[in-house]
Length: 170
Image 1 (tube, rainbow, N blue to C red):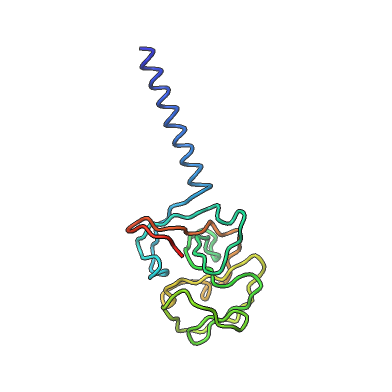
Image 2: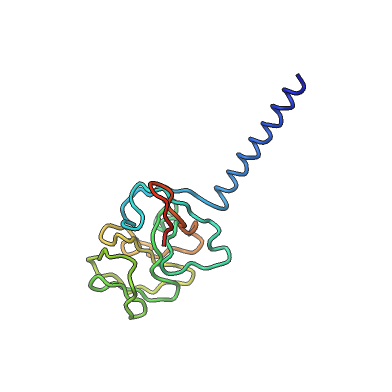
């Protein structure tokens, strides 16, 4: 009888440790997200599941082109997934379907053009300007009341998709 009780206790302890470790990892190291809209198509499709690296910016800063998960600046609650296009201190604007940073056209990350000009906007310190890759169908910095995402509102960097296919996100 003691063996059975001891076995149950050992297994319970192991399961509890696994649950606590999984909870800690989910809240501090990685996050899994379901992509609910087509704003990042053709890079990340609607219904895809992705892994977010919460530690990506502990010792590094976000870079132009990174795909990140963050809290939508107009409500501070809704999670969004977009690409960083503009960095702190830059002036960004969109003219005739092209993006300009400090007056110079940048290489774009998508073949999906946008139709409405925007800006110019000066990006504040520790903030970023976000755009979806599906530019004609993305609710992003161009349309928000609060145009910029503060670094403290970035959850992490999208590293890879694991469903319906496995691929690195770049």
